[in-house]
Length: 349
Image (cartoon, rainbow, N blue to C red; front, side, top):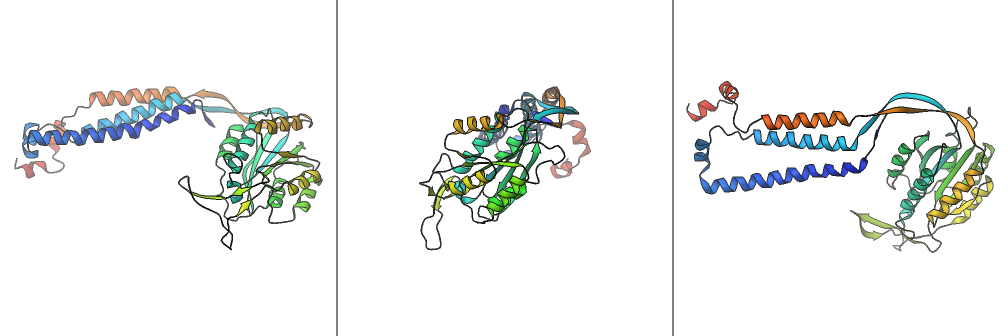
């Protein structure tokens, strides 16, 4: 298992294509300048030992050294030991609606991004609880099994999008049914599920699924994302709105938050409906809910004794820079003697 300690420095990798582009511009300028000085054939006689390949090879060494230095700044760490620890907490499953209606921008920046922000804030305030993630639209998909790795949870959360499930709709019932299999029956932890949705359900059977969840000891808290006024569903290309989704009659579809079904699910499972409009209020409410739920002891395996690996990348960068220094731009005499490409015959030597 490895982690990146300073991910912010990964942005410096953008310097690599920038340096390469500057090299191409300089090479073009250099060729034009030489062409004004003398013809290509004459230049070859004036500088017979100049290599056309080695400048590019030296550039590759410099770019590789730059990449290694940047990775050294990021400081990858490797967990060298897997240990089992005792923890107390609650098992939590987040079910996030990724149907097309979640693209509506009646709540900034849109419903899906708002849902991801809410889950991210909730996870950031957790202590030793375990979390899992489910994505659902016309069907439900297990995005992340129950884990104590919050870093992995945030990574999988960021990858949620409305194109990950081909079947459209909002099958909340399928998400609830899938969640019942996420929890470990052997460890008997307290089970909580948070459903983040605009409440538009097109598949039915929600009440039956909620009843089954209640029988399995799962408390469901629903978070409504969107507004009752609603908004159109933008169809974007490269971040630019091309049009808004229309129905079969050619009319613009207006999707609205429907809290009714979300309230029914929460009530059926001894949970609670939460308005997802204000992030801080949602996180405070969730913290209050979790504090009132009894924590259960469980075993969790996690990597420990993370060791920094930056020194390997710094060492590689120094080696590459030394290679760049010792490689000259002129042709190597012993390579010329090999006559690999039959240059002598071509030049009449």
